[in-house]
Length: 384
Image (cartoon, rainbow, N blue to C red; front, side, top):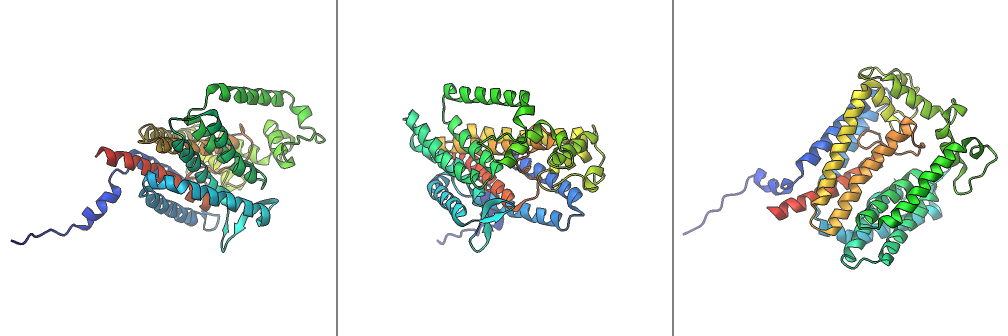
């Protein structure tokens, strides 16, 4: 007797792709993407094709996230060493014959112009998570020293470009992995205390430290000026302090309720520099006020909390370390951007995730979220 098998429907064939997809994380991404599109429509409607390009970048990042989410964590771990190696080689190539723009040598022409430092935002936590997975159960002080060396090499190459903002993000992504791997508080606390004391000393001694003839040696001149401008932006209100002052004015003028969608005067009279990129948070705060800002912060907190929950529930050490670092990367992006626009951190050129305009940063974000989805998916499939 012949056995007849029913041909599976299209829905039945594609269902396994979405099985285990993390709903709460996806909702958080959609919420932030929606906020980003609304904000870009307002601040970019008289800025050429920024809104259209922003939407296209989001769709491309969503496609990348979807594709990466199909790659199991075991496969991601096998890619760690090749991706890290390629990233370091490209950074060396940038150092030797990269493209220079506005005093920085950050780009490389390989048929198309790329910025290899963006790759390290993903390659660094991937590599260090792989390293600690290999050393699981037998971690020694030397293993943490090797991890710091793996972190220091690309960080030094990026700092040399110079690109302080990306250096800080890459270092942060690596330190998160090292911290989650079990680095002792005895090692963590002393440099933190020294850093806090250094900041306090810098604030107290600001007039003498920021004198024109003082050389800080460890920082380039433009980096020194950024720190000094942060301490007192009123010293050069129409020059280096203009960005911070206008950003704070826009945030304050929004009040509790905001001036309304597309009604921001600081924004549309073009007092806010880089209003579609680094300083888009100021434009958002002006139009949506304190309540809108709190809503944006809550959306980021929701995403971060969900990401940390995925990390806590991950099935392997590699997955836990990678998920935790990728999640806190988003937190650092948001915190640094909001902090520099609000005048509590130096201006270092860090975009606001989902909201700021930028193709490469958006794709990097899509890759990171795809990895997070992959880790969440693997755990759900194991349980089912």
